[in-house]
Every structure is written in structure tokens, then in C-alpha cells.
Image 1 (cartoon, rainbow, N blue to C red):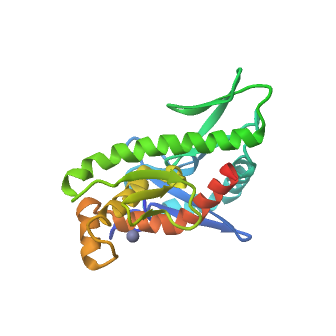
Image 2 (cartoon, rainbow, N blue to C red; image 1 turned 135 degrees about the vertical axis):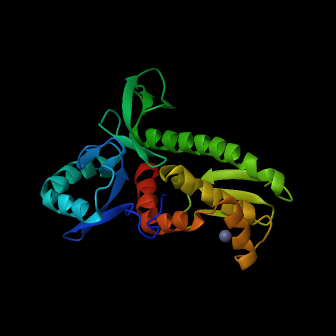
Amino acid sequence: MFGLGRKAGSTPDGQWLEREGDRFWLPWKRHAKARRLKLLVGSNGPRLTLPPRTSEKAARAFVAEHTDWLWMQWSRHADIQQSPLSIGAEAELPWFGQRLPVLWQSDRALHLLREESHWRIHTSVRSSDRQLQAALLQAYRQYGQGWFLQRAQSYLPELPKSPAAVRVKPLRSLWGSLNATDTITLDVALLFAPEPVAEYVLVHELCHLLQRNHSPKFWCEVEARCPDWRDHRDYLRAHGPGIKAEARRLFG
Ligand SMILES: [Zn+2]
């Protein structure tokens, strides 16, 4: 579940916290082994851990009790998130719903690598923040293209044709598009969203190879391949503006 939708009777996925016009999303995660309610503000953002059988009411009361602490932690965290990427400065980069710390290393040339739990960025004495920004965009585009192409493979056998190309680049308002010559373009900021959300946008564009419209027939094709598409659409409605703003901050 990645959306804000919830199934009847189940625990919500999280809650919005608001104060003085600022707000953030606090995800709730149930853990079979958790013994007590726990609030955490880690490099992936804030999170509430719930032991099995904790009631929604008890969870909300716990959060209300710790709101001041949470806001203090959150503003510290947000300071790191909101400053532009600068060589050598403490930073975290979004990666499919997580935030990965940046490890800086001196080298002879600017070079970026995404490793399992962090980004490793090699910079030289001649590297500038502007060059870093361009190299970062290039790295995300390249990873993104590989990721989307790989994900597309499993859908191709049931499509009348393959897309002519899959391109990944910054898009101002759209998440994806399919042009008249069957090239799919996807927003590089989708790499900041959880994987099922990014995959939904890919499936959406692939289904336009079957139906070049948003008719009920089109949505049937999407639903057959991605039954949770409504959750992913809701996720993009709720978090999309923040994700796109972060892309503008990082890539210029
Ligand atoms: Zn569409």
C-alpha cells in the first residue's frame, strides 16, 4: 500500500501532522515484533512503528503526546532536505521512497555512484556545484532509463508493440507521456517515489499503446496490470508537488 487510501477496518497508512501552515506525512508501519509504539525520525523521514493489535486511537494519542519532540526533529531534518546540494556538505538524496546519505570522496574527476545504502560522490578540486547538479541529473536519468526498461520487459509480451524508446528527463507538470511515434517520456522525479508508484506511471503509458485515450477500456487495461493503480494515483496527488519541487531543487 503506497496510497492514502485505506481498506475498511484496517489501520491507516499514516497521518498528516500540521502546525503553522507547515505539514508533513507521518507513515505508520505495523511490525509483528514491535513491543511498544515508537516514533523515529531517520534518514528516510519520520515514522511511527506500531506493535500488532495497537488501536488507531492509542496510536493517535501517542503521536499527540510527542508532537513537540517530533516537530523539533522534523525541522532539523527538513533543513538538510531543503538546502541545495553542495560539494562536501551533509546531504541526503531521494531514492524510491527512501533518503540515502551522500558520502563524499576526493578524486581526479567528478563521478557519481549509487550504492546499496548511499550515494558515493567523487569530486575533484575543480568541480563546481553547478557541474555537480548536472552530473546528478545525468546519473538519475541513466539509472532511471535502465530501471524503467527493465520493468517494461514483463509487460511487453501482452502489448501489440514495444515503445520506440523510453526517455527519462525532468518534466514540469506531467509524470509521463506517449508521443505519436510511440516514444515514452517519464519524469526523472518518479525515481523519488516508491517503486510501485513509478511502475504504475510506466504501466499507464504502456497501456496507451493499446488505447490512446483515458476511456473505461483504457483503465481496464491499467487495472489488469496494476490493480492498486488508484493508490498510486492518490500518492502522486498527495506527494507529487513535493517530489517535483525536490527535483527542481536538486537539478535546477
Ligand atoms: Zn494517460
